[in-house]
Image (tube, rainbow, N blue to C red; front, side, top):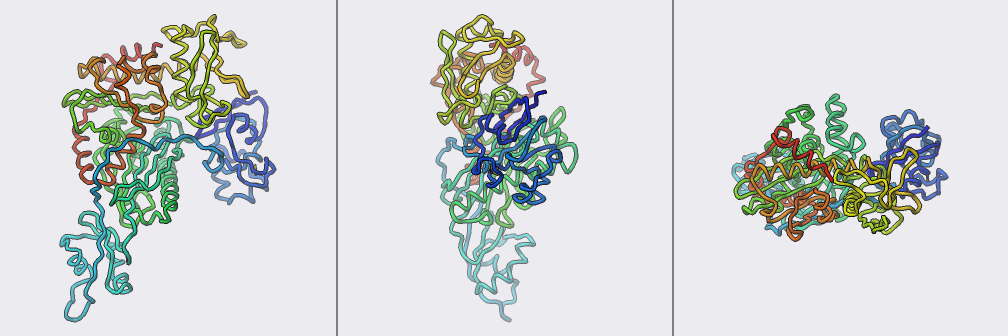
Amino acid sequence: MSFTIEFQPLGIRLVCGEPFTLLEAARQAGISLRSDCGGAGICGKCAVQIFSTPNKYPPTDTEKTFFTETQLADGLRLACETIVENDLKVQVPSGSVIEGQVLQVEGSQDSIQPDPLIFQKMVRLDEANLNNLASDFTRLQQASEIKSLTANLEVLRRIPDLLRKNNWQANLIIREKELVNLTGQSLLKLLGLAVDVGSTKLACYLMNLETGEVLATKGVPNPQIAYGEDIMARLAFAIKGKDEANTLHSLLMQSINQAAAELCAQIGLSSAEITDACLVGNTAMHHFFLNLPAESLAFSPFVPAVSNSLNPLSSEIGLDAMPGSHVYAPAVIAGFVGSDHLAFLLAEGFSENNRVCLGIDIGTNTEIALQNGSRLVSVSTASGPAFEGAHIRFGMRAAPGAIEHVSIDQQGKAQIQVIGGQSPTGICGSGILDAVSEMRRLGILNHRGRMDKSAPGIRLDDQGKPYFILAESDRQITLSQNDIDQILLAKGAIRAGIDVLMDYLKVKPEEIQEVLIAGAFGSYMRPEHAMRIGMLPEIPLGRVRAVGNAAGAGARMMLISKTIREKAEKLAKRVEYLELTVYPEFSMFYARGIQA
Ligand code: FES
């Protein structure tokens, strides 16, 4: 009897025919799991987290020496001590792998003048005496020269003690007209945190608010992946009850807090010195990090609980930052088109001109915007996680060992390029796209996406089903008809979204002046292959540009500039949302889009 072990967040699945340890399984799957002691149970480096069924794997005495009771209850185990014989989903912490997933944090960003909401001001007060009976806060207001300065109760409680211990001096941290906090000394840097909360990854940026300098960056996997690759699966989990919703919120905030703490530590500071933050994400992620009820998003007509911008206290959403500081959560557009899309449009200057421009952010949910003159319309299409390797037999995310590019010769032999230059362990989205495009060019696939059983490079399995061999080294990597179908469905959803927008705004492909493709997949994919298989309309290649993590760039811009936040507020009102499923020709465009 065979069973499947799924390793997240890499998205690698291994089909096993006999029981063996998780460490051995990871090796067979080509995952560089740390095992400093070679599996002797001595080093504790091979820690993994078992989801759903940790009770089926009672901790061994060795594991009890490495993990606390809470960690064991959370499913932490040693891979070398855990013998698996049934289906299992395992989370591999980033610290347990030798080389991590490629998580793109780079993106273009206009150099903008910092214009932060936060500033600091050192003030000296006259000591209270019988001739000056004004309250401590009144005198702080006068010294700040902001008469309407406000402060919450927590801050007001701290003022008397700090003033008296600090010889009547204080450094005020002010957010517009609100006293966020006060310190004894000036802060070396006013720190800000921008995060693009993606369904798959979290891109975190630590910034100097006064200079606009990016001080440190970090990409980490979204830990919610263990509860579903796509957002509908996570929404289905979240609406089971308050505990489940809190679990998804807490997981997210723990990862963001950990990443932020590491970024701060890199420059010798701490999270408590983060004075402002900006978090963006699709509508589901937005609801998860704000811990908003997600029921209305889980069912048609998929209405957000809140769509306008919010400024909660960081403590209200569990973000580790300076007490009293706020988080800016920009507006979401509608449906699943969230604030990450707004940030993308902002970063790429959609608010600045009226050119005919197509913007595509490819992910599990793909958001697409088309601008034509003064009209700017966006859609969201459920392209699914196939381009991130899910539902593909040897699929994996872009990580060392992933085949990222493929070309095929006339004899049907594949030439591959592997991330990290090592033996291939799987194939990521850009590699699959190349392979499908090449197979189509050579007639190995027909226009309906069916494999030609007699074509070069095609072999038949025991049941006579065709498959194509991409690599045969330590591990045979193949593409099956089902894999091809998954990719065609994903690219069909994207193309249908583009076609609906072009139809709605009466734009022909040749009229599109620029195509901007965001996201890690967009950076790796070859536009000519995307056009050959019909994912993109036929547009001169020079007009297609990969823009990296544009949502992250937009979040950084909003973090450091209140002028940009004002632009974002206006842009959110300008973007029209179009619901694809009610567009009359959507089914026709989708049926056409899934052809090879
Ligand atoms: S490999 Fe060292 S404890 Fe598992």
